[in-house]
Image (cartoon, rainbow, N blue to C red; front, side):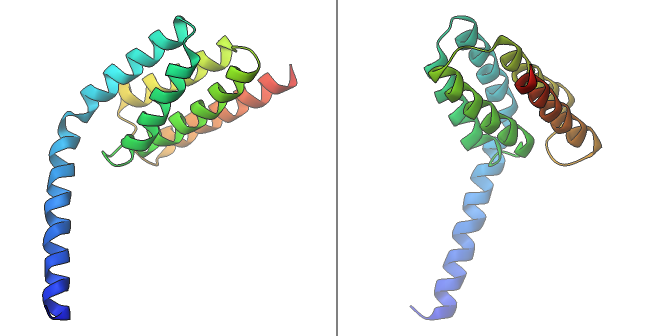
Length: 133
C-alpha cells in the first residue's frame, strides 16, 4: 500500500469515527442528565467511591460528546471527592459542584463563553472561601 493510499484509508477511518461520535452525541445529553442524577444519589447516600467513579466516567466522556465544560467541572469535582474520601464529606462543596453541573446542563453551556467563565470563576472563588473558613 502506497503512502497516499494509507493516508486516504486513515481519512476514511476518521470520517467514519467522527460519524459514530456525532450520532452518539445526539443522545448524550440524556445520558448526562441520568449520570448527574446518579451522581447526586451517590453523594446523598454517602457512596463517595461510586461518585468518584461516575465523575471519572463523565470527565472521560463529556468532552468527546461536545460538553468540554462538563469535562472541566467533573474532573475538578472528582479531585475534591478524592480528598473527601480521605478526610470528611464537605456538603457545601458537593452542592457547589452538583449545582454547577446542573447549571451547565440546563443552560447548555457546552464551551467557552461569558456565562461559562463566570461559572468557573464562581466555583473558584467559592472554593477559596471554603478553604479560608
